[in-house]
Length: 303
Picture: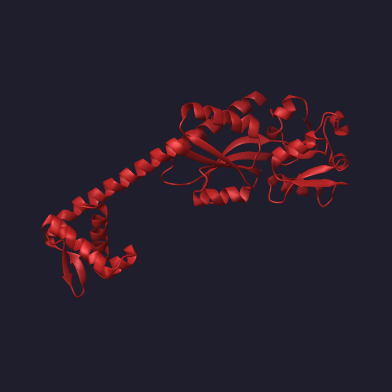
């Protein structure tokens, strides 16, 4: 007896027709009929009453149907459990916009690996829209995404706030702006600006703050990490949330520093997102909890 035989008989019973069942199962009707007859011969009972109007469950079949359903449900549970164990022991995929990579992401992965030594964590850098699309499609288990306060959260996505940051100007310690306590927008425009490419929240924020004005010279790059490297090499300054600069290795060794932007500047929220689903892999749940704990530690350290 094979599992597909039970699945076939359950489909025929549900649809009341060998023809419709064959179409749904994507097999030929003669092949389906032969499979059902083989099962009937093996069990020694006629499971179906075949008529011109269609196939219906026989009296013997109706007595056996609850057992067939229970077997199929048990097979589904077995497959789900096997799939869950595979995901726990193999892979959790995280999409990130590359913000707070060192102070948040690296310690989280290190802590998670201690508890899940067999689980691989794949970290994929992407833009916010790409991450949210991958979450909806199930390609990512978790997504680390920047938002400006007041932004809407996509439907179907569970969102946990990790960090709330103030936009700052990231610069070299020998920059003319490093002597300022805060940096005004006119002062920002005096320096070459390393801007995030269109599609990043920080691009949208800087564009909003400058209101159409622009620096004498600017670069465009993907993500905070490349932006900080370009700052360290003396190419200019960039605007990032403070949680993306504080604790960065370049900041710890004194290669980059930061000053807050003057005025009432919108705050940047770093959020952890995951698709709303009935079943979330245990490994993804555990990694989610580690992210939340680490974010609380960073918040406490900043107080």
